[in-house]
Amino acid sequence: MADEAVARDLVIHGRVQGVFFRDTLRRLAVDAGVSGWATNSSEGTVEAHLEGPAEGVARVVEFAQHGPDRADVERVDVSEGSVEGLQGFRVR
Image (cartoon, rainbow, N blue to C red):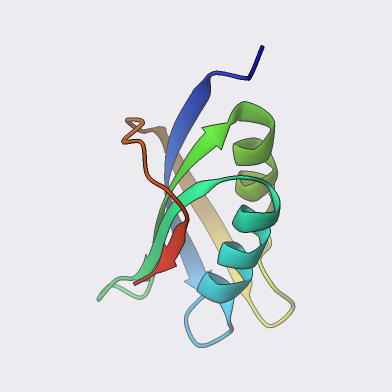
């Protein structure tokens, strides 16, 4: 029996733009079987929507806590999201 899909919405604060955060997040999400999207906000954060198997989503959320090498994550706001049935992962 397949895991029931879960969804999480993230707002990632700190030095997270211009450090390949979104693309690194996308690659990890695809490897973890997670769909969704990531975008830069005008406030300097990265916002993301993740959905898929609970274990895969948790893996991507854990990565977001530190990000790629050049990032300096101050905090990640995580909230329960709605499963939208997205396919694939897009960088917006």
